[in-house]
Length: 334
Image 1 (cartoon, one colour):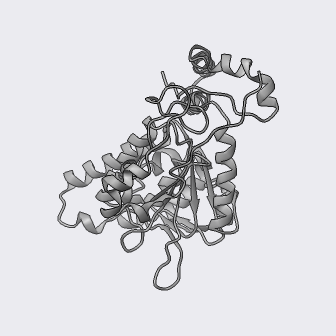
Image 2: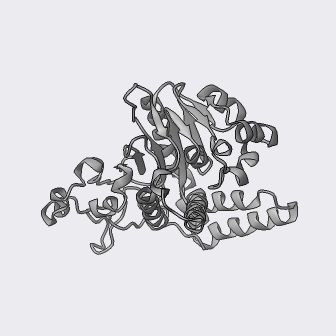
């Protein structure tokens, strides 16, 4: 069965943090951005890929405005272009925004890819991605509050790592502490030659406590993890790629976003249920014995069958080979 051309409506291709001011969130403006329903059921909005979707509105992005979001509907790509504080440091406000981001991505089928980046530059002209946690907000905190705050960060990082979509990070500048740990939550990390990475925590009487100690060796191997964590030695983008902290080196932010858009375009053509099931199974197999890995694979495969996605793929096999996008169903996680 050959599919017809996609009848795509893209009302949110230009949604960004710039139009999330109070005046732009008026009822009048929101009504102009309302998604048009597809098909014969006017009460059931659908995305441009044929997947049943909720309406991605300015209000959805308003909940994560502190992260400076921009949604590109053509690619199903949500871009976060960080630009806050003195050096994109991560404090309580940003953690709350990331909590809201997780809630959005866990429920919103229109988004198939996430990219977090920044074009921030210091007064001295140094590019910055994330210059660590906001330690100044902790002045006056007792030990119990500090511990609770770091537990919150650790739980957030784990949630980010297990989001049911493909996530990317594009570092173009200083990436310290929390920033380097955040890179570990991405499915695929890119860096420019201007990027630099370091874990300064042991020089501050602590250690990387928001995923770095637990996961760094899994990504880099024990020797490289000890090198970074014990000495705090900074590494550039090329060295980060060599040791596996990032997976690809790109010339600049624009080249990186072009690369991410190419990946997002590929994701847009695939079953959101199959992508989510593959990612969950792959992450959960890590460190487990073979028998358990195979059981996780079995369960994930059967989820694709039981959700009906496998049947859709079979029925549309010729169309898929011809480059068409089949009418995948909404993402099913259980």
